[in-house]
Image 1: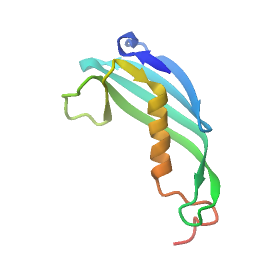
Image 2: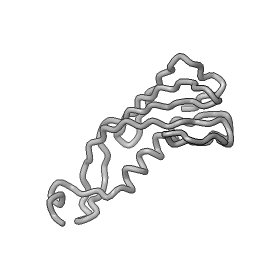
Image 3: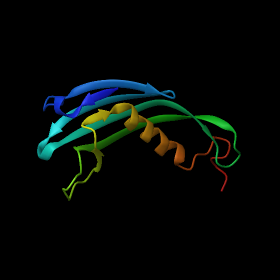
Length: 118
C-alpha cells in the first residue's frame, strides 16, 4: 500500500495490512519539521525456524513500533525514534511491514521445547 507523503496531515490516518500471518494496524500523523510519525501495532503469529533444533514453529507476535518518516534526506538530530528516509515522496507501508517482520526473523528464535535449554 502506497501513501503520498504530502497527503498525510495532522489528523491521524489509519491503515491495516497483513503479511505472513502478521496483521499491522498503522496510524500516520504529520509532525513538525516535515516528519511523519508511524505508529504500528503488529499482531498475529509468524512461522519461524528454531535456531537450536531447526524445527518450524509459530511465534506469537504482539509488538508496538514507532518510527519517524522523512521526505528525503533527514538532517535533524536528537530524535528518540528511528528515522526512515523516504526518497520517492511515497510511503510504502508494505515495505515497512516487511522490514519489521525481517527484524523478528533475524532475532534469536527458540521453540518452546528449546526455550529452557542453554
